[in-house]
Image 1 (cartoon, rainbow, N blue to C red):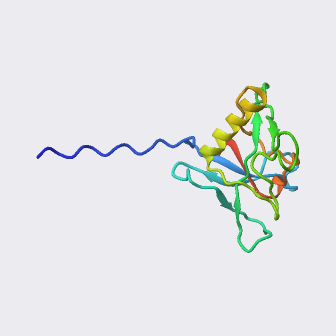
Image 2: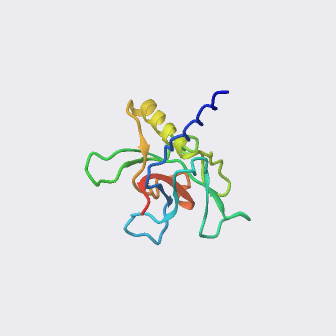
Image 3: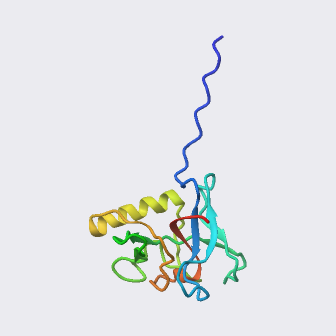
Length: 155
């Protein structure tokens, strides 16, 4: 009998080779606003939607959903992107749901987060948005209280 067909190659990871940073959404102990890294998502973690928070949480678990926030890329090399934690009005317009203890934060994988930002940007301004290059602190939706997706490579 003929040999069995070769196994298909593993699916290509959408997560960049160096991984992507998950930042704290707006810690007070980070005055230069470079962001405090909570985790690094790497290839093989495409399904992750939560990270372990290294700080006290309001629930009995320290697992927190990674919040979606979208950005319009900066035109200035090295500049901070323009954040969109919400479009229209808060809290109804929060792009990933409302954070905080009583929030309704929606869960996104990294791939779904990238796709959602692209679609929101096209619908809002006719140009795709991306994940952000900073923590976007104090931009609303109570995302300061937990982890947020970024497009930054891990260190």
